[in-house]
Length: 172
View 1 (cartoon, rainbow, N blue to C red):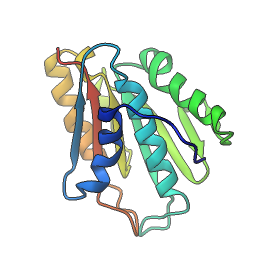
View 2 (tube, rainbow, N blue to C red):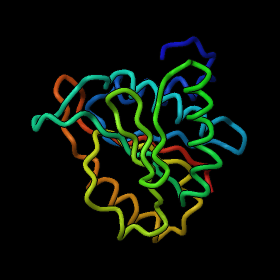
View 3 (tube, rainbow, N blue to C red):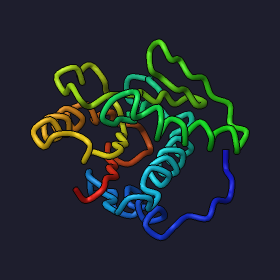
């Protein structure tokens, strides 16, 4: 999966942030339109997937990740498109179960979650959540979605940092 990619400064910082600051749960990249936030988020997700390969939690389950945005259509046009392109470019094998909205890379499942209805974000247990463009949600829905994601970001994986959330958004 490894490949050399030239990242912008803010992309590099959001990729490294969860590992440079393992004591911090929430990590944010707020930048303007066209700044490469979604690309940075995808690279951070891929970096995390690579670090989690083969790792399990105390129950013996492999690591799981959440990738979320306003809705599945928005997610498909942005983050998922960028993720699939990056995985193909690096010749990384993956499975995309569109029926259940899960992308599997090696031993890591990536759950694709819409945030527009926070009350349906339940039942998941993930070690990392990656949120794209929270500014697309109304403020009250955004707050409830963040609460729901925080409650689901709880899987403790052996030999890995505590669960964390990475969010990228415009400053609206």
